[in-house]
Image (spheres, helix red, strand yellow):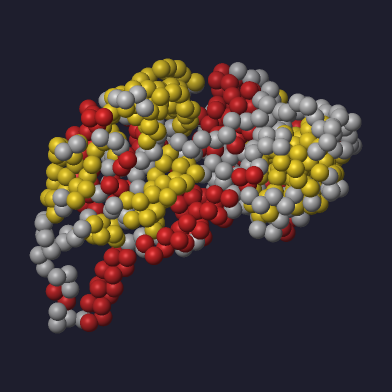
Amino acid sequence: TDLSKIRNFSIVAHIDHGKSTLADRLIQETGTVEDRDMKEQLLDSMDIERERGITIKANTVRIDYKADDGETYVLNLIDTPGHVDFAYEVSRSMKAVEGSLLVVDSTQGVEAQTLANVYQAIEADHELVPVLNKIDLPASDCDRVAEQIEDVIGIDATGAIQVSAKTGQGIHDTLEAIVRELPAPTGNIDAPLKAMLVDSWYDAYLGVIVLVRIMDGTLKKGQRVKFMSNGTLHNVDRVGVFRPEMQMVDSLGPGEIGFLTASIKQVRDTRVGDTITNDRHGTEEALPGFKPAQPVVFCGLFPVDSAEFEDLRDAIDKLALNDASFSFEMETSAALGFGFRCGFLGLLHLEVIRDRIEREYNIELITTAPSVIYHVFMKDGEMIELHNPADMPDMSKVDHLEEPRIKATILVPDEYLGDVLKLCQDRRGIQLDLTYAGSRAMCVYDLPLNEVVFDFYDRLKSVTKGYASFDYQMEDYREDNLVKMSVLVNDEPVDALSMMVHRDRAEQRGRAMCEKLKTLIPRHMFKIPIQAAIGGKVIARETLSALRKDVTAKCYGGDATRKRKLLDKQKAGKKKMRQFGKVDIPQEAFISALKMD
Ligand code: GTP
């Protein structure tokens, strides 16, 4: 394809501002997909994505568009995830394209992820086309939002395209703007092959599929290529493009985006950001490459039924094949038996993986409290990376601890600012900046990641009635007064409930935890003490009183069906419990106990 007739772009937006809907419309308007095959959110292919309405994996589509100038252009759209956990995917897909549509909901305005994504687009040298979406809604206010884009982001938004991805209004203008305002790619067809490995995933039929952007040269079926990061050689079996379903082509040239398969067995054998070239006389210079995504949140996953451990291993192995950012290792817990300690990019990532294991593999799980990685500096000078509070070494041997800190950006309407500041303060935040963008306050906070991974986002949404937006980036590790808090139920420590806390907040946390557990653990035939302790010292205590009567007692002489139902219900409840000594603890206690109100 003639380079000047190619436009490669992505769409950046805050979550729910309509990115996927707009992509669907662009695909439909250009007749890429027959109307009868059109499903909503075509690019969100996984069921879970469709159900939750979020985009997880970057997806790509090639669109042919006959423009008003009479020429036919090839538009390659790379769809990117909007959620903060997947920011790294956004940044890498951006390196593969020249421009972005900046979609802002004209009833809402600029939000935290709008900013975060725009900064990434600017860093990738993108040309930006502002698009104001949802103009069909009565609350739409394009002038105000355009002004806000100029104020906050500093780009000219006077010519912003007004669109309703729902009704299709403005879609034609958007396509024209893509052709007119975004630059064509550059590249040399006569140079040796130089392709960027943008993404890869596992397909049950074709093996690993590698998404590539060709910079120079040509990629052909049957060609022998080299992955420069590890020097491995592969024979290219197939070359193709997404429309959005796969379509095989003979070759891809400079500026084009498509895929290859080469009998690669594991996603792990491909490195995102790698440079692909000819096996002989290849390019000398590799592309800069991307930083691999590092898991920042860890938790334990244990089967409720310990007989399902092997099934869990199998499920985790399979999921990891397709998700290089998800890490795991075997873990044994005195309380929960065999399971896995898993690392995730963030809480949403954690939830997605957990849901998939439960749903697609039908394994009921106990998830332990999420934790970050602490750096434990021992008195003998050694530094240990602590992924699991249960492994915390004896405090007498520890010199000090460091925890990861983040820089959080929160945008919130004025009236909720007070609550947001209080929440950040409660979570040991340090205010770095507070400015205004229209009627919205933008606060920048330095926060410990461990105070955020758990329920910060839920709390933020609840105190602001959903009006705040939030984004963060990792900053550094810093020393603080951190201790391990253990929890004892009926005098037995439950290792899966132990957590790292700040010394000054330990009592408060301990008390809240014991109170919460008291409501979560059902009463037994005997009294159960619930305690929180630091080292050997008990800092909080509650007692769950004994159950006096048999639950079915009141049914005696009564209706037998009702009695059976009650017993069945108890049995079903039992299934989700684990026994600790003599006490049954319900599965949800491990997560719920840590949610602070
Ligand atoms: P993520 O994929 O999760 O990042 O979200 P998104 O930005 O792709 O948003 P999505 O396309 O899922 O749209 C969010 C919601 O807004 C959906 O319920 C859409 O139906 C709705 N929506 C999108 N565009 C419009 C529009 O132009 N008008 C109206 N009324 N609703 C829209």
